[in-house]
Length: 115
Length: 112
Image: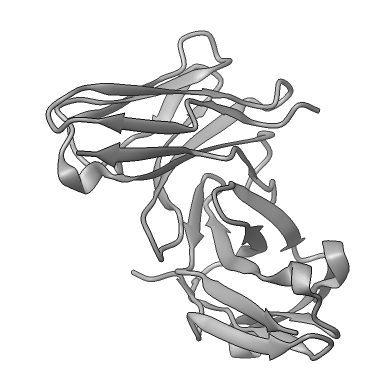
């Protein structure tokens, strides 16, 4: 079990630039989740996939945010035209399908800083 | 609507003392409840989960939590705090099979 891997760990960019983060879930897991975590807050759910299907995306923060999981394995989260308020930790998690009792396993996150 | 409330954003205990971190949930359906721990610059690690099999749930590192339906609570406890327990703790509720809601977290400080 290699755990959930996220890349990069840190990203610093200028306002207005596009950024893309990658998440590699635990290989046996078919569900993948993206969260945003700001300082002093708990993770905020953004979207999730079951295999390659994006089953919930209404909670993506704006149309500048998009996520893909083209082959049902790794996923990417893209933020276009970044703004100061996008500075946060972006967390990825994965789990088995199987309902609400399946715990999510988290990666160490990508910390985004907007200059 | 807020699904999870963690009372006390900061808790300090002496090494060896009881740890009590509070979590209350609001849900019209039986929830699944989780406690996670987060160390600085890391992701969240599962401590324990409640899935209706037993109301007292034992987790890793000596932590346990008790589900009390009448109080809509799922408080986390540990009999004796260690320095290594200093971290951020999050309570989470899972609803409808696909949505996790996290509390705002409780920062635990352990005083030597």
